[in-house]
Amino acid sequence: MTVTGYKKIVLPVDGSDASYRAFREAVSIAKRNDSELIVLHVLDDFVRFANPDASIKLYEESRVDALEILDSYQKEAEELGFTNVTLEVIKGDARYGIVEFADKNKADLVVVGATGKGAIERAMMGSVSEYVVRNVKAHVLVVK
Image (cartoon, rainbow, N blue to C red; front, side, top):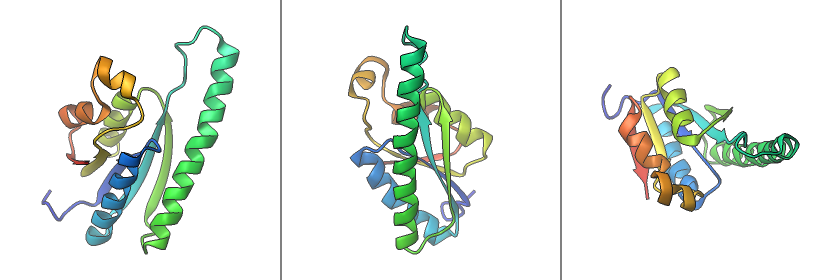
C-alpha cells in the first residue's frame, strides 16, 4: 500500500464537529484515489442499563438519529461530486467496533476525528481515536 494507493477508506462518524471535518478530508482523499468510502456509525446498544425496555427504546431512537447523520453525509458527498459511498451502522462500543470493522473489511485507511462526543468516556477510558490509532491494521489519519 502506498500513500496514494488507498482503495478502501473507513470513516467512523458520530455527529460531532470533529467527525464532520474528518468526513470532508476523507471525501477529498477518496476522490483523489478513486476509493470506496465507507461511512460508519457504531451505535451503542445500551445493554449496560438495568431497564431493557428503556434500553431498546433508546437504541431505536439513536438508530434513527444515526441514519439521519449518515444520510446527510452521503448527500453532501454527492454534492461534492463523489458517489462511491457506502453507509454502515453496527452495534457495540465505538473503539472496538471501528477496529474490528476496518480490519474485517480490509480498509487501507481509517480517517477519524481527533475528538468526538464522548468527553466523559474520553476522560475515563481514553479516546476512540487513540484506541483506533493503536489497534487498527490500516493507516490512520486523525483530523483535528
